[in-house]
Image (tube, rainbow over all chains, first blue to last red):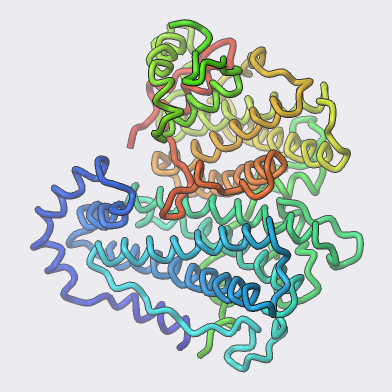
Length: 293
Length: 234
């Protein structure tokens, strides 16, 4: 399965969707009205209701499904990655240290699985079709299993490096979609996307600290912090660089940040203070080697 | 309403604990701890009266939201400047180096908003950190955690109020850095709490808070209060 094709397919939303939206509009409107009183578990459904209310009968529904399915694909990638990592640790083939490291990877994995379920429920509740889960090749070998990360589930340092790349990329991917005009037009969906976005950033910060604790960062002497300095990854692989390129900028909206208004702000701090978005095309190119065509 | 709130166990809560608990209540968490201080929010409403005639008005529309962010960044920057000026004892060099990073990030955010807002910017705010014991690591980290988590929730809740796409992207560029700060602060308080269930719910979603809830907290740290009465609400 090719991810680009999947995205294209999703763009051709079921033509009957508009009809369904119209006939259910009244019910969903009522449902949306009580969203504030719903239990947590029912929120994706309520989200779908609001979403439907906002978009019923408009072309915008396609665009928002597109964004949500794009997000879902990334969450599938992350969720499966941690599921396999946790299984490998449990099976003794991946040496994630017992205690805090294993617990952290389990926590992060559980969040990614929750994101998958949330997005699938939200898309379905709005009358859309969640994209199917791709088959992944975590070696980044496009299905050959012999890519640069072939040892990802046997080498803990490599596992953390790939985890860091996924999390930092996830942050950039959500950020790149936030200003999508159709997402912006739907407060509920936009806010949910932002609420996932900051969780990915929390994950990224923690994984980066785990890497620092574990050591073996490349190049020698590099200081990986919870935030991204310049465009450095601390990872010995050109394969991840696209996830960091562009993070080094130090001008925001035309405002130079280095030593702004006479404050002592270094180039490093200026780049760290702002995370940068990636476009959908950039993200798809980054994850493409991880998808079995 | 008494200044000191009695907890269920009869012990007195510190200011930091009070702030943490009332913050949780403001953010919509329920439970035994919050139930104890249900009276606090009513009390705080009087304390932080949004109709204070002397309050600084953040303005309306996107300008108002940018000023809202500018106010929060002013508060955060001032807090970390103070942390580095009067360092608590027991902070290892590596820890203080990252604290200095955070300070610089918050100053960068503050100055960025100031320049971006130009003549629409609100004035420089005077913080009141009298409730924070800057000599005590535990107290400083608890306050830092509250500031960062509140900052994340504020940006998450304000995104939908922004109408200019470029501003939303800019807010997005900043909020993830605040979330990285929050995760690190939480981890040095207790490793593994970077995204625990006090901030990430069962669906994997972080907290989002609307301006009124956030301003209630922010105003407890300001000498001259700010008012979000003219901010957009949807």
